[in-house]
Length: 102
Image 1 (cartoon, one colour):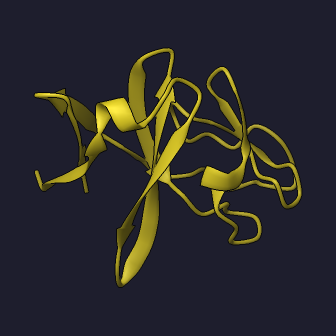
Image 2 (image 1 turned 60 degrees about the vertical axis):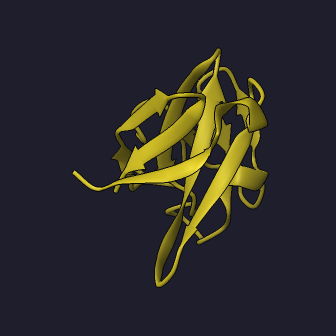
Image 3 (image 1 turned 45 degrees about the horizontal axis):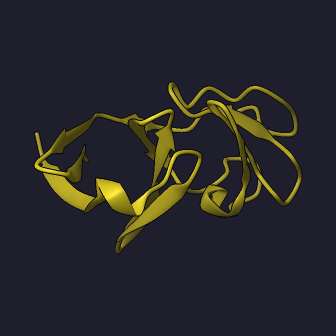
């Protein structure tokens, strides 16, 4: 496993997102859903737009560009125009820090 330090847990309020840059690879979004942290690709699979800028409702994120919806917990594409799921990543919180296994 390759755990990277993503962010301070306290820096991501419930219903909010942090972006982890990882050049040259695409960024990862870290979501806080009711105090639990999840990580997926940050880029919408429909039209390559940041999901961190999207609307979050419970465990669903909606892309602000064309309103494709994804399950934050699983990465599953839930509505058109997206048909490809996001990649989910394992997350752990230790000592108030969120780590993502990339």
